[in-house]
Structure formats: structure tokens, C-alpha cells
Image (cartoon, rainbow, N blue to C red):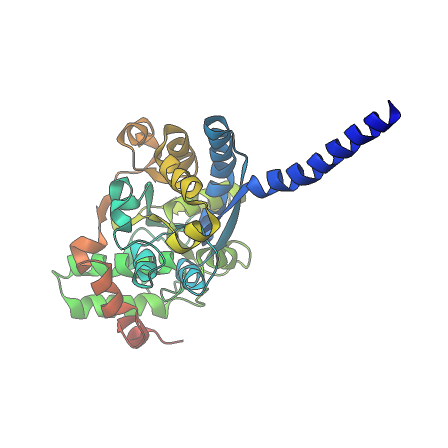
Length: 335
């Protein structure tokens, strides 16, 4: 009896030693490499998706996040950062990765809405009482006004802000590129410091108390006001702005090596689910799914939004004309 019992215990111990590591290895971990101001959104989204995936597949997942300026993040992934998915704030960064063979060439066709589950736009945040009387883009170029904008060379919201201001000037001056250039030059003359990312610009404005206005994504503006209080800052909508889509893509190189394609694909697909779209609206991202967008219509101001394609002929042309080394931004910006 004792010998048999001891053998049974030994077999059980051996099985446990074999099975436990196998079970541990079976658990998958995804890495979502994203842009600066999407931290809170994905912090809420991840557990909802993990619970959904557990119920659907029986598999326990974990999801890690990495956040910084959109363009440096794309470069980090190109250089080997093991992202399973990228969730960016501008198509040019995903196109950059496609050019490196890191994501699929047809990434924009792999998911609905050009692979953008939500979008935002650029608006202003000013000090309580709006002491400088800032109402539109024109007010940001006036002498004595300090504007906080992250670097368009490294941050998606800096790039969108630059393009939105340029588009506004084109409309005001009947398509004059010369006038638009001068307007952009005057705007960045009023920028006291260029942070590398959107969250850094927020810190400069909100915590370091620098600047009369912060120009950033609509979702970030509302989160800042909620954090600081309506008695400290006010939200200002300009007469027009630019649509800022937030595209996503699967990192082909990583998911095939790690064996996480199925999980990563589901992670991105679920961004279009009603649950995920509700989380997007909660964080003031404009939902791409029409039914959810209609439900939250009162939450978002209806303003004129232009697109990069409409005004600049697409991201490739905009990047070449304005943001590569030696292009228009480098020419107009003076420290």
C-alpha cells in the first residue's frame, strides 16, 4: 500500500512538473505599441477584450502597452520592438512600417473604415476666462500669445495641428500657399517649447503652466479639463479643423514568430465592437461605427473637418512637402 501510494504521488508530481510549465507557456501576451495620449483608452479596453477572448476561446491573455510619440514608436517597431499590433494616430506611421515590410502593404484594407476604429480632431484648451480671447486659429498667431504644440517631426498631434493651421490659412487666403506658409511660420513663432510627444505638451501646459493655449486632440483636451477642473481651463473649438484618424495594423513579423496572429487579429477586430466603441466615446474619441456615433452625437461638436487627402493629396505628399528633413516645417521653424 505504501509503495503503491508513493509511486502514485511520484507520478502525480512528475505530471505536475510537466503540465504546469506547458500551461504557463500556453498563455499568450500581446504588446500594443501606441501613441502618447491613448494610454487611458487602451487601459480600459484591454481588460474588456481579455474577458471577451476568455469567454470565446477559453484562453487567458495578457496585454502590455507601450506609449510615446507616434513617429518614434513606429521607428522603434521598425528597429525591432516586438509589437503584436500598432495603434497609431496617423496613417503615415503605419505606411512607414508597411514600407519596411513590418505590416502588410494592404493594411488599410484589412479592417473597416480604412483600418481606423475611431478618430479625433484638433481643438484648443485655454486658461479659465480665456484671458487672451482665443476663438480661432487667427488668435494663435497674434503677438504675445504663447501656444503649446508638440513637435510635428515626432508627434502626430503636432503634425495634425500644423496641417490644420495650414488648411485654415489656405481657406482664408483663397488657396495661397505663400500666405499659408507665413501663417504657419507665425504660429510656430509663438510656440515656446517643442515637446517630442502629446503627453509632454500636456505636461508643459497643465503642470509647468506654460502657454496661453494648448492645441491637441479633442479626446486629450476633455481628459485634461476633467483632471484639472472646469474652473482652471476652458475648451475652445475653432471654426474648422482636421480629421485625425487613428489607424491600426497587425505586425506581421511578430505575430508569426510568436504564434499570436489569431489573438492579435481578434484584438484589433474587437475595436469595432459596440463595447469598444462605447469605450472610445467615453474617452472622447469619435466612434467609427455609425450607430454608436449617433448615440453620442451630443458629446461631439459638429464642426467643419477637412482631411489630409482633400487638402494635401494624402499623407505621402504632405510628409514630403512639410515634414521630411529640410521641408517646409524645418524652413519656417526658428528656435
